[in-house]
Amino acid sequence: MKKFLVLPIVLLSFCVIADDRIILGSFEGDLTVEQYNTLGHKTLATSILFGVGASLFNFKDDGLYFGTRFKYLTGDRETCFIFCESFNAQGSMLSGEIGRVMGQWIPFVGLSFHSSEVDSLSERVEDESWGLNIGFWFDYDNFKIRGALTNLNDGDYRAFSFGRLFQRDNNVVLGVDFKFLIDSEVHQVNCSLQIGRFF
Image (cartoon, rainbow, N blue to C red; front, side, top):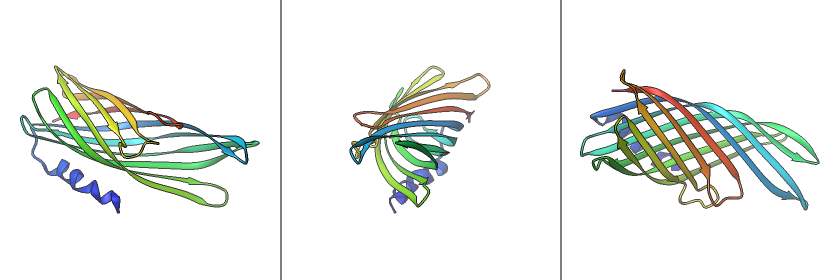
């Protein structure tokens, strides 16, 4: 049910009339490494996922900013305890954010919904969570620089992301975004390579 908290912002992102609109497709990569104890012995779990995503950002001069992002990834999760086993894994994320255009600075807040699934030999393990996000855009010449703290409500998966978009003369937009966990025993790095168009 928590995913429906994100939907109003997502719908506004599609309906708002904006001065600047950027639509992006992306190639996503995610690496997660965690270690925990099983019967007094260390167990290492590694997940490597790849997938695709899409983003829509609406910027209105001296007005409201709306953004939405979606990504879906699949891959393998390998668990090593005495011997190693590999399982199919997948994950998805839907987020929406709203902010205010204040000259070059655009502060925003948002919500995100995350789901993951791992198929083991005996069962399917599913997990769903939501996160509170805050961040900013900084508009400089042909660049838009982005920084954000995500999952503020979850200390185990609180993360920092940094990215930038570059607009070429033909209105093609290139972008890159990195995200990594902070203050967590789980090591996770996400990379997003983006290409799209400015309208």
